[in-house]
Each structure stands twice: as structure tokens, then as C-alpha cells.
Image (cartoon, rainbow, N blue to C red; front, side, top):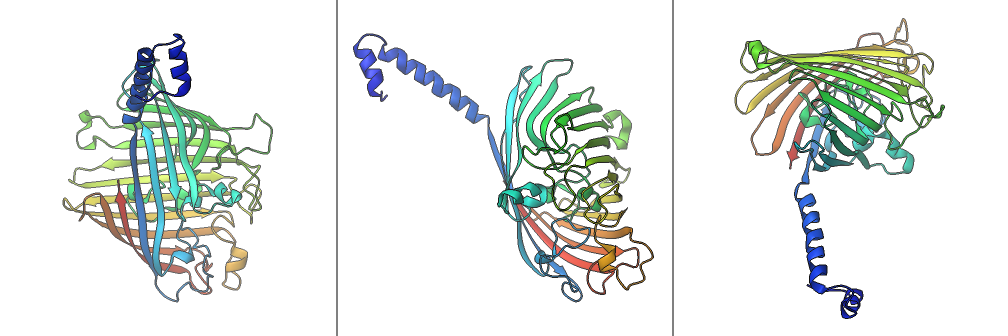
Length: 403
């Protein structure tokens, strides 16, 4: 073992022994290796190709918004895309009563700022921190698990990670929900069937260390409950029902009316197993009051309803379908006073519907490979998908490698 000159000098003076120093350094190195060995590395690379049928962008400029479509702006249409790269470092909680751990999740790529829009504020367009928290357990009752730092929102049927969802494209409801909070979250499992969570965060909206411009006491509050069907419920076992609420001020005032607003989100949803082998169904309801809206900046509202069906046709084939509906104040999805001009619009309330069919075929190990056909439709006289388009038809291929 190599010693530095100060250690050798102290040893020469008889203050310390080289043997004791070596033992201390070996013990310290052993502790470091033990901590590192329990850390896991995981992640994914998400790619896609999307084609919009008809007249190209239908009059929408490259980079323009496809109303109701998260991440799928016109810059992604009619070509190949790197969506996002996710990298996670995590030490999960063990079964110890006083367990401790952490998680760091990083995003690279164009979709990163779709999760945390505050990344644009610091001039970084293709990188963001998705999660970064300390995990702790306290041996109270069945054990309270804590997350302290930045963590994902507690509500929603779908995830930011496309491969975790039944479909490649996100639902309307996903966009009505917050994505990320900085604060503290407690989770408690009452039984195998029932669990709760509750938390306090700086803001309703995303942003590492974001702050409301209101008083210090104005924080975001959140709570949820999950009920899972036990084995005793026969074919319903594994079915899950979920409800949650997030209420608080948005952070970092912006020109879109996102800041300094008390925003509330309510979510209810669940997945239900059926007597038909391989078939499951699900549903989700999202309601948002007073969200970011530059067209109707006052007391605006929006809600979305989605129905899901999933069928595992074989070991490799899986088919997923979603029907989606949303309505809300003008400006929720588009400005009816602009895109609806001269098209016979009777009111400016946004109203959209969509149908999505996704085929998933598992050919390679660790790879998600699927194709998706989606139809979006304006249910009013608006033509938000171009100069003369009430409809948007898209075909997408999605390939994701998980590691």
C-alpha cells in the first residue's frame, strides 16, 4: 500500500503506526465498495419514425404544435427521430427497518424539455434532471417510505417513458397533469391491497427548485390512494384503482400564464383484469383547473377521459387500443380565434377526440418494437391541424432499447 508523505512523517515520529493506517484505509475502502455495489445502472434509448398523412404539415410551420400531441410536434413528422435517452443510478431501499437509498434519473434528447420545461430557462434544450432524491424508511407501523428531493408526480395513468405505456403516443390527459415536483413525499402501505401517499412540494409545475412568486407559505400539496385486488378476487386479482390530487401554485412566472397561478389537478383511473385470458381494460379521468393558458389566463379549465384495451395475443404479440376525449377553455390545446377563423366555429371551447391502435412485437431481447396508427379529430368547427384540416392521421414506428 502506498502512503503519503504526511502519514510517513507521523509514523516516523511514532504518532501513528503504518499498520493501523492501512487497516483504517482498508475499512474505509470496504465501506465505499459496499455502498457502490448496491447501486444499479439502468436506462433506455428511445427512437421513432412518424409520418403524417395528407398535405405534409397541413400548413403548420416546422416546429409548430400538433394540438393534443405531447412531444409529436411538426418537426418530428415525416422523418426519423431520437426521442430521448434515459439514464438512472439507484440504490433501492432494502428490507432494513432504517433503510436508506437514492435515485438519480437523467434525460438527454429533444423530449427532455417536454418533461421539465424549465430546462429552457437556463439555455439547455436537450438535458434535464428527471429525478434526484434521497430515499429513507422509518419503522413506524408497516414502515413509512420517504422521498426527499425531486421526484415524479404521483398522478396519472401514463408515464413519461413511452415504453411503459400501452401506446407510443401520450393521451390528452397526460398533458393536463404535472410531471415533476421538488419537495418531500411519504408513502405508506396499509396492506397488500391498500397504500397511501402524501407530499409537500415547492410548486405544482415542473422545475428543479422552482418557486412560486406568491408568499413562502404557498406550496403544492398532494395525496393519493391505490387499491389493488388480492388473490382472493379470482380473475380480478392484480386489478388496480387509483385516485390522486395535486394542488398548488405554478412556479417561475412565464409569458404563457404558467406562473403565479393556483392550479389543481384531480385524477382517477384504473386497470381491470377480465375473464378472457390476456385481455385487460382500463380507464382514466383527468381534470385540471387554472392551468397554463395564454388565451384564457383567468379561471380556465380542462378535462380528459380515456379508455384502454390491451390483449396479449401470443408470447410475442400484444395489441393495445385507446380512445381519448378532451375538452377545455380556449387555449388549452389551440387558439380557436386564430385556427378556427372563417370555419364556422360557434364557440371557442376546445374539443378533441382521438383513436390509437398500437401493435407490439417482441423480436429482440431488451427491445420494445411497435407500430402505431393514430387518428386525431376536432369535434367542433375548428381546423387546428392545418389550414383546412379537422383531422390528423399519423403512422409511427417506435424502437426502444432498455438496459
